[in-house]
Amino acid sequence: MEALKPESFFDISGLACADLIGGHDYVWEILDHIKTYIQQNIKPNVAAVRSQGDFLTTTHVIWRDKVITSDLTLRPGDATKGEFTVLYRGDVLEDATVIYAGACLMDDDIELAPGVVVEPGALIKGPTMVGERTEVRQGAYVRGSCCIGRSCVVGHATEMKNSVMLDQAKAGHFAYVGDSILGRRSNLGAGTKLANLKIMPWPIKISVDNQVYRVDRRKFGAILGDGVETGCNSVTSPGTVMGIDCLVAPNMTVPSGYHPPRTFVRIRLPKTHGSRPIV
Image (tube, rainbow, N blue to C red; front, side):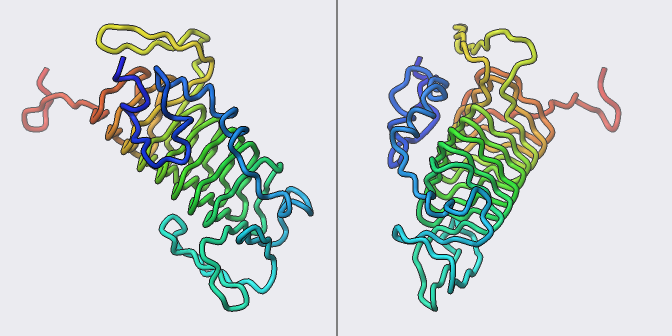
């Protein structure tokens, strides 16, 4: 079924994690391979940063395999656009990685690419890979088995586990991303929850063109194709699969199953005549 292949949801050209995303019969099969892919490809670079413990009491900068903790001047800006400036003794360090004091790095199996900014109060567990110029903001909780692309945002009070964010995906405020995949340029409105566990332990079923596909995963959040956007306080039901450029209105609960590209999930109001509904 071509409609359910990863290539129908994501442009994988130029992705650092293209080997993880491509080549599957069904897009949700990616979820079974995230941890193994990270373990096989990660280049951990935080051991020296963690030498004094998990909780950082000093701001650290990683630049060209060097760890710097003094004589630094930070000029905050939008890291995803390369506007965060780091100076060491007056010289600009291009694409330096910044881990602020107050962040927690819970183990060594973490890779922070050039230009990444980890703000105070963020907590990251491994194995996790964070791509170039991504922001992990204050209060973010990255629980491990997370593959985060370039120029992404893991925002304040956002929690992630066993998930993928492709380049320029953003979960900026109070989001939950569990056992899910966010496509390029996808954006979660504040308070979006990608629910990943059904109350009843029944298999998830995805129906496309009158054919039903059974997904034998106890936990399955959402697959959001490239360009998908959700409104504030929206919730996707476990096993939601949305094609490219879908939109979700604020305060909506998206039913599980397949939603074709460019679907607009919203409340359908009854037709009215004046101010009175037509019954």
